[in-house]
Image 1 (cartoon, rainbow, N blue to C red):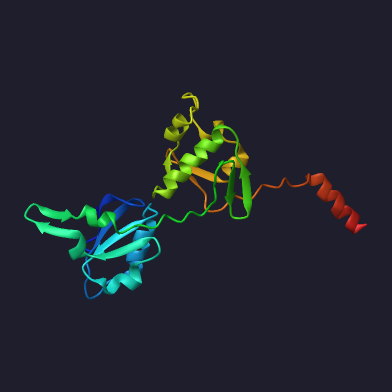
Image 2: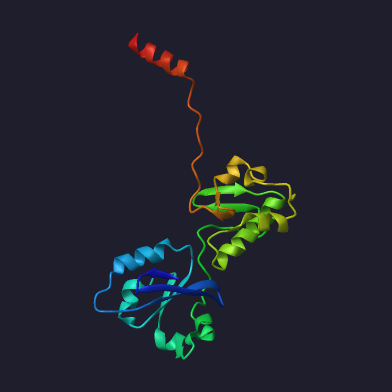
Length: 207
């Protein structure tokens, strides 16, 4: 898929020793909009990225802790039928486990996000453990129905709100049938005092 005309393409997704990662091809040249390339790659829904380029001069400018840049001659062969990727080579590029932004350790009953802790119970523990495993291998989100089915939730459930309370939803988000753990917990909503109380306070100040 062409992401930037005649400059940047998403080729495929490959399996590495540390999980799945999308593969991109960047054609170098004299004048490259590095900020534009970074912006497009940043909009991609992927925790890991492998970027194949014809010039490693871009390595320092484009590579990040989650984006690995490799030379074209190590990853691509030009055949008569088209481009052939060296998936074996690509599979060895990413070796380090994906850093997670939350903590969920055995027995998986406490999800720690930032400075907040969520206590998990019963099937919630298995659901969150499975979601953690998906995040750890490169899925930024995952189909919540698949996770719910694996956790033996009723198939009659049509919404995550039927599984999780508002408190749990502070730690997870969802959309388009997918669910993911937030980067930070949503602050608790503190109920405002009744209007008449505020009015009484104002009046007492006037008096």
